[in-house]
Length: 354
Image (cartoon, rainbow, N blue to C red; front, side):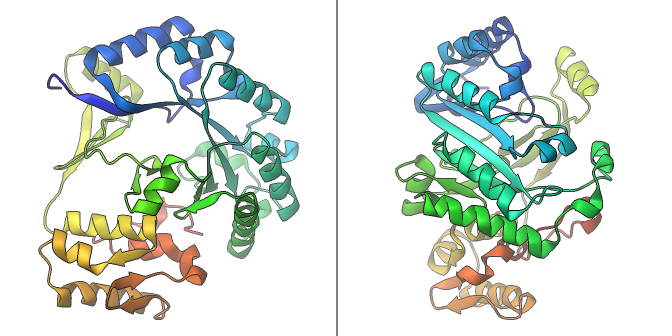
């Protein structure tokens, strides 16, 4: 990297970084900061597993500049936790939250899942109420992705206990209404934030973005992924490291990058990328913004709108200002966004969009 680069965001996750010892955490933080210092107003977030955290490791993270913590909950119901192999009691999670806040880390993220085996409206209601008692600034409400052909451990889950698509939608709506009732702002398709949070402000001023980690208020054009299988984004395209840990480590120790594959932006990639992001972040596409930013005629842009609308029985709204997804159609937002993707991905490798 060139000298003078600043980090606006640093995130440790995509695994369980709190498995590291305090000494390894300190060495890693020092190495990162020798490469690039934090920018003013930086955010250093860490995914924390309540089962793998203690005061000493939190001390090391706080001393290194961590100012946002993220805790995965999934579900607090003991039966569901046993099925998915993620036992994590409410009391243990509360203890971790208290330890985090005692160290001056005020910003807290949390995430839960809907669509889990044996999950019901009553059970997800109890989980949301327990989660809200921690007063997290942001919550991600992700749909459980059942892909046993990719994740072998999921083959042990009782598929007949999984909710139907309609039941999944009902579970999402139940949790969504509870968060809104508790004064959270709805952010995009699956996030919620308290008023005044960076995501809520970004949504208000039109600068909300979405990357591999979800919604963000970071407008940097460069995201550097570090570690096996991580994906980087540059103004020119994407690059992904080797997914095999052994191959990744061997490449790095050999003084090479471990890039295994990539994609250089070409044609209308950037245009379609922005259309997809606008749909996912704002539920609308501002025609004036697109026409000002990209070399496309109004006629061609509106033809793309009409083609997308036709795929959804003309349930979308097309106006002089652009394309808009009505509230009642928003559960289909991910599929609407995908309709603007020129790359035909096989359905075999993906979970249900609802």
